[in-house]
Length: 68
Image (cartoon, rainbow, N blue to C red; front, top):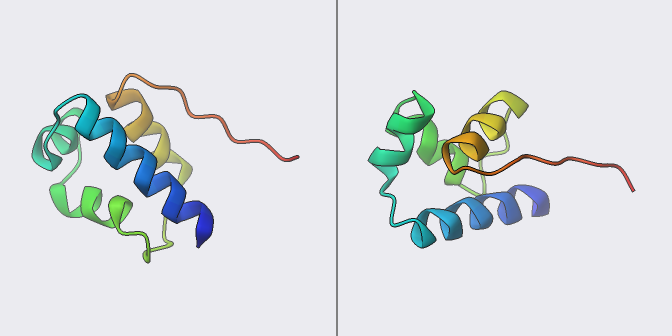
């Protein structure tokens, strides 16, 4: 749950930095605003790598997942 909270926060911060609304980011991700709301909901843990990758690409970022 902590990881989801951080990911949701990072996406929200990047949206603010790029002045992107939820609707605009959802369009760039080729998904619905409801799906984006689930991504940004820190209590909804049903997150897929596909969704994360799509959000990262739409924001012009790369997704990096690693085990340490």
